[in-house]
Length: 288
Image (cartoon, rainbow, N blue to C red; front, side, top):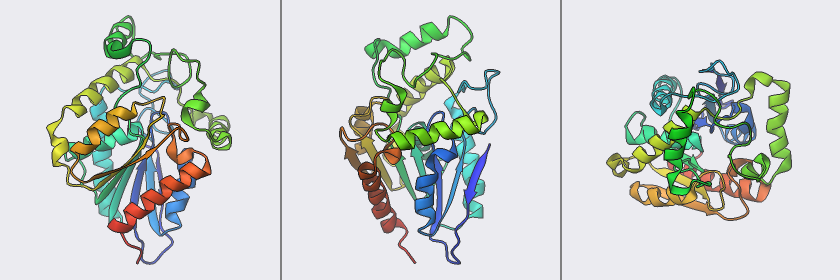
């Protein structure tokens, strides 16, 4: 695992944040937000998920994001969290965007991690329906089974069968989108392209199983969930259905002003999101 670790400059750190990005992300995409929390006295840490970013690849197609079981993501998070929590000052906060939010919530439900607080940003708890509608999971199984399931599921973009461009799916802020492209251009080994068919199929399976997991009702960790209701990449309705089942879960919604990457949106959206997170953290870890 490729790890980003930025220790607090303070003699009395406020605590430690472990931030996990989404599918295809690398730590560099979130330097702006990580710097925001670091300036407040937090230790900030992140690692690139296996199979993407600067971490080891899981298929010969180096730019294909592949996983054979989402349980591996959960196990990686649990193992990393145990060592990280033992080596950093508390309180300990975990944050996850998109796929990172999905894995984080699974780990909470499975009691694989026990942080003091958690933040889920546009969590991947359901895929937006495409041309196959409610039969999308079955369609993915059929198409994926026609060859090597480690092969890319599609050629480009973040979502197949759409005319919406990748940048529009992710953010309205062209400069922040360009920042991601700059990193991928100047450090090409960080680039992760389309997911594999197995990633897609296992994603459907993991989200379906999580939605039916009764352990959600027993999560003790306070959770803040940020949801973009106009998200065209993941299904915000799935997140809004699931949130009430988590005992201590607050929800903040954004409308048409926000695409999928809430923390990489235009300043009006991003600053509001950071303000909501900061207020949540102030309750869990007041400034010394």
